[in-house]
Every structure is written in C-alpha cells, then in structure tokens.
Length: 469
Image (cartoon, rainbow, N blue to C red; front, side):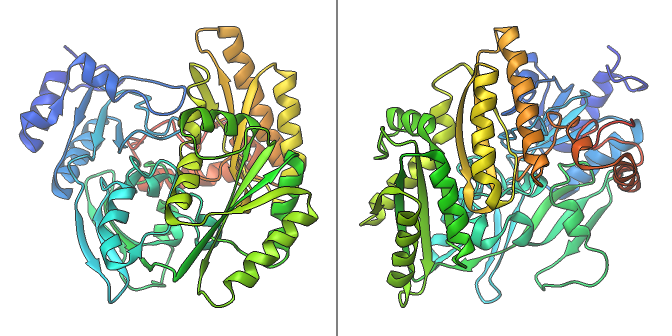
C-alpha cells in the first residue's frame, strides 16, 4: 500500500517498520480507531494521520524527524489534544508524535527557582510536584488538569494568573529542541537574559511549526503569603466590564480578574454548583495575593471601585474550600457550556481593557444577528475574551451561521486595536483572519522564517501562516 501523502515514494508498511525499529512496535499505532482518536482536538476540525508514534526519549524524537524530513512526511507533535484552533490536527496526514510517555519532572531546583520537565508533563502534575515545597508554576490554563507543558509552550498559553504573572513565554527560560532534520539543540538555560537572538521567544507560540520541544526549563515561584478571593455580582454585563477597567486604571493588579456572563453562570451552576447567583447578568472573580500587610486595604479599595460601578454585592471567600469552589466553577465553565448544545466554537479575541464593555455589547448584538446563544467568559484583566458560540454541527445552516459570527467577533476585536488570539493560537481556524492583522509583506517574513527552520515544510504544515495571497 503506497503512502498517501502527495509526492512521497515511501511505502506505508516500510514507514511503519522503520518507526517500530526506532520506538518499539508497541509504541506505533496504526489501526483506524487509533488514527481517528489522534485525528481531532478541541476545535471543529479533524483529519486522520497515517501513523501515531509514542517516543520515550529525545533521541527517538530526533530519529523520527530525521526520517520524516528525508522522506518529506508531515509531522504533528501532540500532547493531550486540548487545542481549540485545530493546531494539533494532522491536516496533511503523516505522523503524529504523541508525548504521553515523555512525562517526567526531571529536576526541581529550589535554590535557583527552576524546574526541568519533559514536554509531556501535565500542567497540574507539575503544580502537584511543586506543592510540597511551597512553590508553584504561574501559568494555569483552565485545561491544566489535562494540557501538557509542551502544548502550553506551543500555544503560549495563559490562564487566570497571567494578568499579574505573565503567559508561558514569561516563565520558560530554556528548551531542548529537535529541529526538522532531527538535529538536537538547547535554546536558553537556567540563567536569564541570554545574549543573541531570542530564539526561545520565536519558538513560544509557534504551534509546532519551527521545531519540537522535548524538555523545558521553567521558572517556579514561592507561594504567596496570603490569598483573598472575591465574587463580585453585577446586574449589567457592561458594569462588570467597566469595573475591570477601573480596577486596573487605579494601579491595582490583582492576581486574577475573571468574568462570566449569565449564560455561563447558569451552565456552571447546573453542572458544578459553585455558588454563583442565577439572577446575575455577570460576575467577576477577583483574587489578590501577596503579603498580609496592606492586603485588607487593597481589598477595600477594590470593593469601593466595584460599588462605584453598580456592583450588587461583593462576597469574600472565607476559606480555602470556598476559594476552590469558586475556581472550580470558572475552570469548569467550558465543560459546563458543552452540556447545553452538541457543539461549540470558542473564540479567543483580545482587546484593550478599556474596550471590553463596548466589545461585549457588540458580541451580544452579533449573537442576536445570527440567532445564536453565546456564553461569555474571559480573562478580563488582560482583555482576553472567550465568547463561546453554541450550536449543533448536524445542522449545516446553523454551523455556517456560527462560522460567520465567529469571524465577525474577531473583526470587532481587531477594529478596536485588539488581536485574534490571546492564548489558543491560530491553527487552522483563524488562518484567514491573519490578514486582518498582518500585511502580505509581514506574512511573507513569517514564511521565510518558517522556511529557515523547516525547509521541507514537514513540521505541522498548513498551520499558523496562510498561503500566499
């Protein structure tokens, strides 16, 4: 049986045999069921790979890439497949490299506040490994229970705490990379501020199109002395948005500042029972962390700002259990919304904080225009909006309305000086919208960078950068 990728001469059976010789027969998956399992992610897209391999070492990854480059076979590196823009879809077939067996925390270096991990480590597993020492890793995407650190790096993931502490690229100091031809190299290290070009910055958010990380050096942090968590309840969505801008405008940077609208609140309460009021139009979860001294004064100032913007009530979590319940609701928001309709499209636009109220109003109007139910939750403190469009993909007309509405929401974000992704990446889903942000000349520069790293275009082809014109 010939291999199905255009222009290839390698027989599929020969490919499978060579991969089995590299990683062991038990780590090569070829059945139709296995290929289907690794052919979709959290987006609306799907495509079958020819074969799935589960390497156990960087050297095995290197051998796989060397073979793929030599034969011109597409490669997609994959973690847990939580990607929401189609970035982990094997769009052109080929090989999926799954990193579930490269999942070790290799070193916890408390003196230097660093950890070294393999890229298949789950975000939450690193948090759990650090917890006994009183340390944590700041980037905490809502998918942290299942998303891998390699995937977080590929998408430059954020999370609630990115408002105060920054996204993944701010916490990754070094990485072991396998280039498209199989060459292994280290970028960065435990020391900060390495000279020369910021290749690590280029790699973060490149969605596996430039190289494949196998190990990562991350910055770890001491847990704060105290944490206070508040639930602010509003009768108007725009008032909640105004309060967000006012808090940041007052020079206060909470650890987190999250927003949910009525649709999300209702879904969460029916699913998780987090204690959110069903009659509210919006809630904010506001978390402060730091030293005990001065914390009550800061909390009082935030309450004053919320009152100035017509907050109905501000509740303070009185225990760690109450804090955990509030966060369980927020981090379970997407899963709760998924209970309402068979499918969803989760957008990821980011806008300047001052534009949040106006864009929220526009999203509501877009929902009415296209006759769609839209639940809105967001990392409001940094303007990262997650409007979630609910629909049934079996209804082709409704699906088309969802795609049109999603594109219109991204255009609304760009129109006010925002962008089309804060943390979910471009993948397949937003290729056309890249033209909203970049000229053809700028996109051409990106293509030349891609070609320099991956001259045969084997690393996650068809993603991130649209074709010419």
